[in-house]
Length: 305
Ligand SMILES: C[S@@+](CC[C@H](N)C(=O)[O-])C[C@H]1O[C@@H](n2cnc3c(N)ncnc32)[C@H](O)[C@@H]1O
Image (spheres, rainbow, N blue to C red):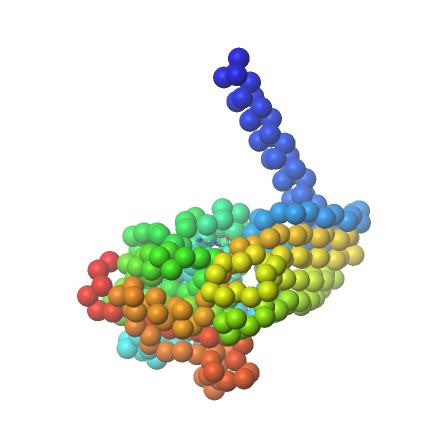
């Protein structure tokens, strides 16, 4: 009997979960889509990466075009080839805004993300912009791709999704294996608090047409101390059609440039080619106005693919 009821119960639980995700998605679509007639208000606790529209809007304050132009300039300067990369891979790509911008400039672009929802969203974005984008639904810690890339990028602290030093080494080796000879790997790190310093809440708002999104990023621990910690992320989207509040708890690990540089050395695959900040040549990572540290790693010769 147990053998027959368990699958039925599992199926019922699965269907309930599928139905609630469908209801949340319809409300989310309604709020982000101004054609929805009724004003609604909805609060949910769910994975923020399953709400790619909100995620994309939260980080839309960035100037993706200028960032991609800087990446191309630095690639030309540091690759030795002095030409535009032919093939680019974006890791933990989310909506893949950078990969899509590379594709718009005629560069072959691939986006890799562990979330199927994000991969689907990225493909839809690329279709809407009439560019070709390959997506790979994989874990960036350990992956293997047939194609060889000139440039691999991991933007806006997405490297923090890797928690353990051994996984970082595995990640660096996977990246090296899919890079062409002399290929470059760019890691963008936010400028972090010094070791032992108090972690701060970060809040910001973004406005797009008739939509407003407020983002509150709140560490649930006082100090990072080189360990993984939990962060509460709250997104509140307001449009004339309604309000959606989404709350999630993320597990993150903040890697300092020093941590990464130590593991880069240990991996035996790369050396540091350059360090930049703010996607500008006139700001250095140590400057007061630096908001990030962008590490450019060059694959060492004789590292096998
Ligand atoms: C902060 S978002 C990244 C956004 C994107 N890099 C950008 O610049 O807008 C983090 C993304 O990392 C993805 N992710 C988390 N862990 C991952 C992993 N182990 N491998 C690949 N992707 C991962 C999530 O699904 C999410 O889309």
